[in-house]
Image 1 (cartoon, rainbow, N blue to C red):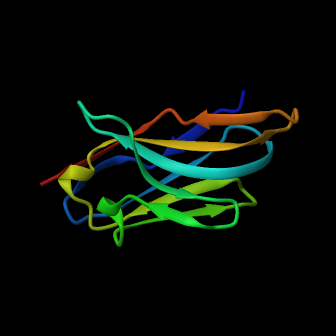
Image 2: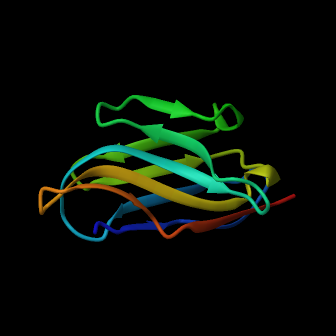
Length: 120
């Protein structure tokens, strides 16, 4: 079982910035797609941004031009740079990654979630 560890959330004023990061807690053989999702109270979890192993990115319309997803393939780490934050960006942010473990088994894992709160 591959576990993902996310960090970087916090409380910020509207217009501010935060950077989230997420990586496996142990060594893996390969990671394919990585992504960030968020869930606001009373809402379903939604995709914020994703990045493929080839570097292709996809963003929710609500964050285009403000958020940037990137990855370090050597460190198996995914980042989410969030700029010009708005109160509606508030929620718990979860990272997701799929790939192959060191035991040569496929995995599709979620991080524990990190709270992002944007005050107006």
